[in-house]
Length: 341
Ligand code: ASP
Image 1: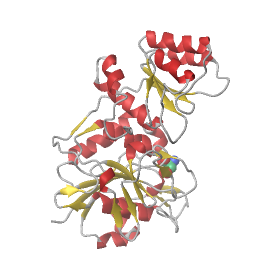
Image 2: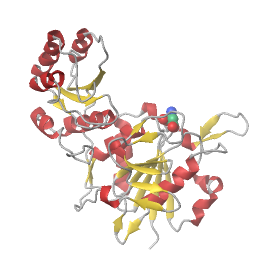
Image 3: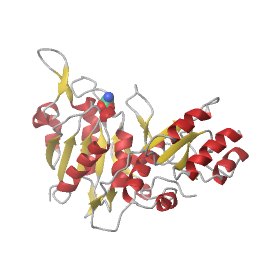
Image 4: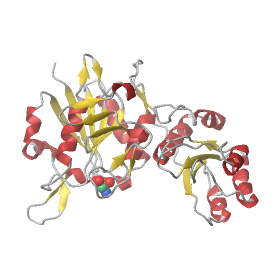
C-alpha cells in the first residue's frame, strides 16, 4: 500500500520564497509544492502538507510551540506512516530533543529538516533535505519503520534528534551528533545503521504536554562571579539550573563558589552538570574539582547535550511532582540521549 506522509511546515528559511513584485522573502504556499519540487511526484507516496497558522522563526520556539507541534502529530498519528517537520535550523535541536521526551512509545518516523538557503535560491539545500526527509519518513521494512525515532535530516545525514546541536551557521552541514553515530547516511542509496536505531516494542503512543520552563543555563568562564550564580538561584520559582562546566565536569574550587551552589541545592533547586565540550562525558569523580560538585549534590549529565538537558529537565519537571524523582531519572537514558558505558 502506498505510504502516507504528513509534512508540517512550522516556519524558517526553508519555506521562504521571494515575492516576485517586492523581492522580499515571504512564506511559501505548500499547496504549490509540486511546482517548486516536481520530482516529488516521482515518489510513490501520498504526501499531505499542513502549515502552521503562526509561522515562526525558530528563535521564537517555546513550550507552547512544542505542544502545538506535538499535538498536530498526535492528532494525525494513526492516519500517517511518517511525519516530516519543516523547521528553522536555529533551534531545531531543541525541538527535536523536546519532542523525543514528550513522545511516549513512538513507533513512527518524525523527521525534522530545514535548510540554510530557502527553496527560492538556486543552490538551496532545502530541496535535497525535504526529499531525503520524506524518503526516510516513508522507509519501512515490512510493517516496521526504518527510523521510528525523532531525527534530524540535514545534508545527507539522519541524526538522532536529541544527540544533535547546530554547530555551523554557514555550511550546509549545519548539525553534528558528536557522541552518537548517524542513524542513516544518504549517498547513492540511503544506508540505515540499524544497530544504532531504537526500535520500540510498545504501542499506545501518547504525548506528555506538561512542560515546566522554569530553568536556567549558566555557562562558566574563568573569573565568573559567584554573585551571578547567586542571582540566578534567587530567581522567583526557579526549579533547576544547568551548569555548563569545563572538560569532564570541572568548576572552580573556591569556597564561595561551592557555598553558593550548595545553598541553592538546599533550597531544593536541582543543579545539573553538562560539559562545555561538544564531545565526551561528564565524570565528576575524575578530578578534585568535579568531585566537590558531586559531594554537594550536583547531578552529572554524562554526554547529554545542553539542548537535551534543557528539554529533558523541562519535561521531567512538568511530569513529576516529586523533585527526588527528577533527580533520580535525569541521569538515566530515556530516549537514547546518554551513552551508557
Ligand atoms: N532563523 C532561521 C530559523 O531558525 C534560520 C533557519 O531557518 O534555518 O528559523
